[in-house]
Amino acid sequence: MIKSELIARLANENPHLTQKDVERVVGVILERMIGALEDGGRVELRGFGALSVRSRPARTGRNPRTGEAVEVRAKHVPFFKSGKELRARLNADGDE
Image 1 (tube, rainbow, N blue to C red):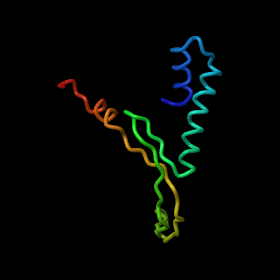
Image 2 (image 1 turned 90 degrees about the horizontal axis):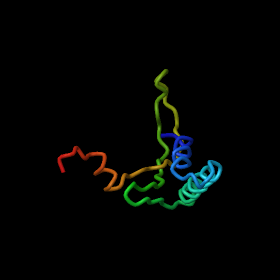
Image 3 (image 1 turned 45 degrees about the vertical axis):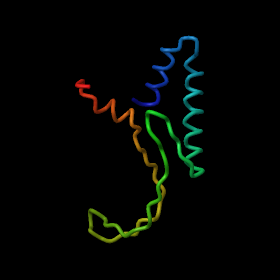
């Protein structure tokens, strides 16, 4: 699902809200999540999972085309850890 599909689905499920209102709410939520991660925080959505930022150190990599060594700078990358409920629903096979 992409952002526009999420907005459309939420707007359809909530006819008392306009699509613009739903779009604004989704935008604010995502901006707040990004802001928290930028500040070095963590975003936890119970039952879904947690987003955090991990640091990767600088390293020497290889150009796959030429095989030449290249320096890769240190960077920060987002990391997602799924929640217990999400994992359970993804792995439910109907036997339980």
